[in-house]
Length: 176
Image 1 (cartoon, rainbow, N blue to C red):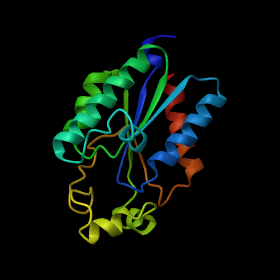
Image 2: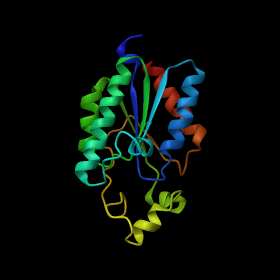
Image 3: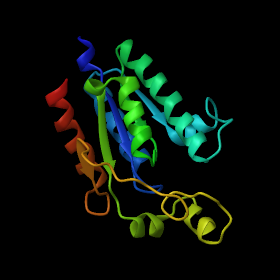
Image 4: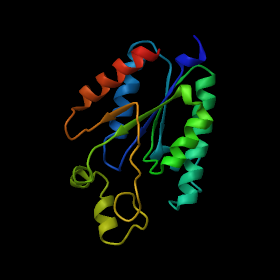
């Protein structure tokens, strides 16, 4: 395999958009194809590697920088990386692409509308943010900068999980 066959699929979108669900299902589908896959999830990394970081713009930047460095290392040893991170700032996603290598970075916007994400509110975070209990919450009191030209855009309000994964798999088949 060449390095070009080891991309990082970077899923970006609001909390509750479906990033982690898509990431888990995509990892399972790729593993079923015999692919070596690693999953990096924002919530998981914030409990370990990035537990010292908060949600200021500077801490978000460092969260994405560390994650991109880990993804690059994993790509170099032959793993397809699936990264599921809100990653609200375009500049931080561009930095991740630079670290990983633009040829290996696949930006996927999980473009589920804010109203749908808020209606789902699987962790109760939107309700807390609206009540003023969470400061700098993306989509409520902190910005989310929509990708300008993602490789794919997946709206989980419209697309079922399986359809989102199938679209990603079709895209990756062209790259692998």
